[in-house]
Length: 169
Ligand code: NI
Image 1 (tube, rainbow, N blue to C red):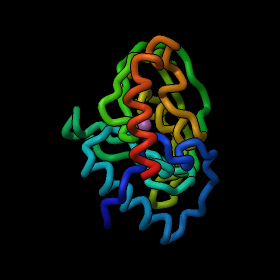
Image 2: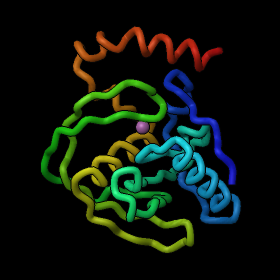
Image 3: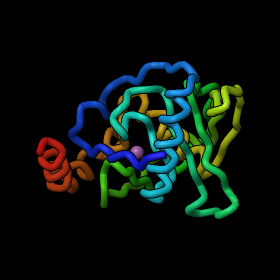
Image 4: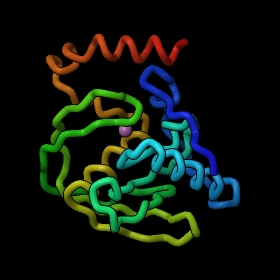
């Protein structure tokens, strides 16, 4: 297991539409590295392209908020259904120090495969639903800033420029 570098806004991999993966040993090893990376960053979620690989894999880990929670692995996920609407403040490991309240569905049903190759379905609400929707967007190359109002984008434009410059360096 290795902690991988997290790519920041400005890296083109964050805009890539990720591809489905086979559940083989290399995928399992990669997932183990993703888990180590997320735990190290103490984030709630991580998508594969945030560590530079455009694969349809993401993690959700509520343990920073609820210590009894385990990390959840979603490989080749499919959103089956969403409903409701909720405003919640989001951050993103690829956008340090940027937080913004975004409205997304309150409930989501997602089907995916876990790291052992088992298919599962989860009906999520609250923060877990929020993390799943945010991470699912990542693997489609979509970012939370895409939901920002023009005024909010203007307010963070300086921070975005700095991130872009840092990731080009
Ligand atoms: Ni994110």
